[in-house]
Image 1 (tube, rainbow, N blue to C red):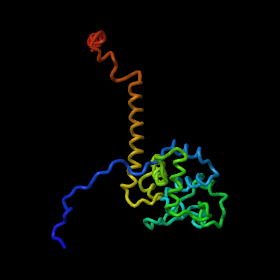
Image 2: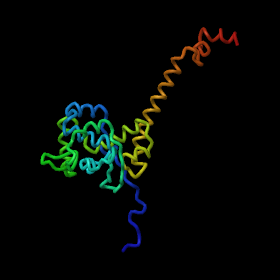
Image 3: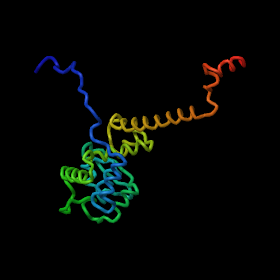
Image 4: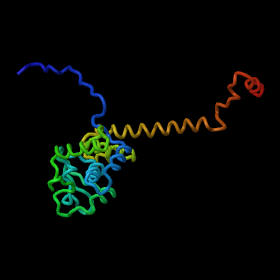
Length: 218
């Protein structure tokens, strides 16, 4: 009803941080120390960390979704179909679960968690483990981080997580590449200055006793 767009020349706003906290390996170890293999909480951890799925999809996974080995999931948010191999960790966690249960992970009432109920339940478990900065969604990001650190490409990571945009995944690979490249750079630097026959030998550039001696030789 108006002739001009009031936001046509406005700039987008900037946000601080990377959103949800991505679990570190130390935090995962701390969580497992509190909830070891065999507990329901550990099962929840594996379902998210080993599949990279959102909580709305991970909490509903069950034997009905396992077809000949891999897990088949159609993501609730984007309707994206995925087939994800079962890792050894996840396989061990679900191996002895009831074959006819509606889901791998069941609430205290014997039914699959609701999305909100699962999020709240995991929130409490994280707090109990002394990890208030961690959340269920952060495990999805931790899965992407692990894949990036393993050298997976953007497309390989998307094949697991189901992200639609390269930009959503690239921050994991870029961070991983930055760490790897910085390590390589310092290794080269250390090797350069620890080599006995350095190109910048002190005798060639000394302003004191060694310099006249070298000059006479030249």
